[in-house]
Amino acid sequence: MNLQLIKELCEKKKYKLNQLACDINMSETNLHRCIRTNNIQAVELEKISIILDVPVSVFFEGTPAEYSQNNIPVKAEEKTVEYMTKLMNEKDNVLKEKERYIQLLLKNEDKE
Image 1: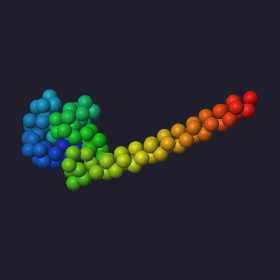
Image 2: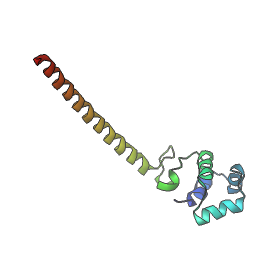
Image 3: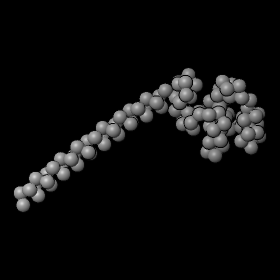
Image 4: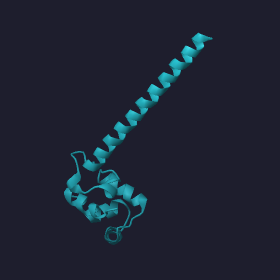
């Protein structure tokens, strides 16, 4: 997890950390401690991601230099495309196998 991104994203979006802390019902001191220790509750991290308009996964996968125009890390996009391509290929293989099985059943039915 990389909570330093919170500071970087705030700077990028011209959003003050004290305002972010206020918006998530946390003291600024506590937010700074969370960033420094790289430890935060999931609920607060989710709130931060909503406020900063980034997916929560950003704090686990990417850095601001890796962002695409829609704020999703490029590496995450690549993984998503690769994963979806793999799923589609698996789906196609399952469908082909089902079609083959159906044809076998139809042939056996014709023989009877």
